[in-house]
Amino acid sequence: MTDRFRLRIHAYALMPNHYHVLVSTPEGNLSSESLCP
Image (cartoon, rainbow, N blue to C red; front, side, top):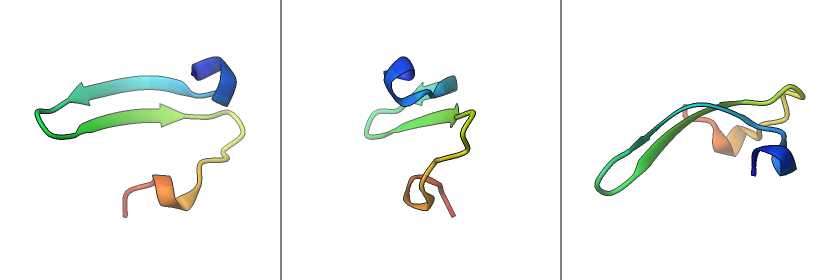
């Protein structure tokens, strides 16, 4: 997945009912829908 979408996964946390992922991309092309307010 990281090669296909050119993401760098810095950290992740698996919770009982959800998850958190800290990612970055060299193109800066993360959509605003994928970011937390």
